Image (cartoon, rainbow, N blue to C red; front, side):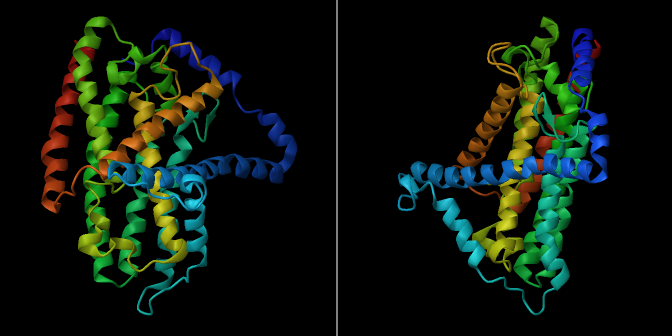
Length: 369
């Protein structure tokens, strides 16, 4: 178990070679250090904003073509400016707060939801030279930080003083807490094979080409690899299914089921507060995809080994793999019907979780014996 010796050595050299020049930061003083920290922490927010625009356009176009329509066509060439028009429209909308709402919690809720999502990006390894915080418990940190989203959704639903909102918030809390169990267990399978919770270490464990990705057994001895592949494939599939429920995407979109709950936990929201919930949802889609990419699809490593590899190519590969999973989430939304509440809970507790326990036991036995 764990990283091979050669790769452990490479990791140490990598950490030393790319360590941030702390002496230079100290020479800048307190305010210079704060400025650098703010600039570096702003990189993910810029990425999220650009990514959300692209994904919003892609979602409408994919949905339209699947239904033999053309979607946006008037605003810009083939409607490419429509997401910008939607943002301008939301900026001009009146910010309405009900008299009976808990004003403080109502205002705070969308920020809590977005902060919970944004904090998870701190441990996402976009490249060998860029990760917000290269902490040893990166995978655990993402699971913990994203749990804050549940608090924000409950807060918004309760503060709205609307029965549809509180129904949606309670559904969301039950759903996200239930599906955090299979998500954490799926992460545990990858941790058992790589011997690390640090997503940079997990990615480096899978370097060398597509045959070394954990989805296909990782760089293990041939016999172990053959035995372990079925369980890593099942684990990745379960992780992807659980991630759909984590971000309230179809067929697990019960918290905001328009046909049942009007809009769910954000029924009473308007303007930019309404938009922040959707920005957090789209950001969360890439966050869960990024975790799956880092754990099972080689992260920023090239699928062709040393060909087309390097720090810049690493960013391309990571974002490309992540967007492929986001596209799959969009595809599923316009393909599958919504589950009932009882089916949703049954899937988590009686299907995904038992299967993952089997995978954990099997992978442990294969690695030890």
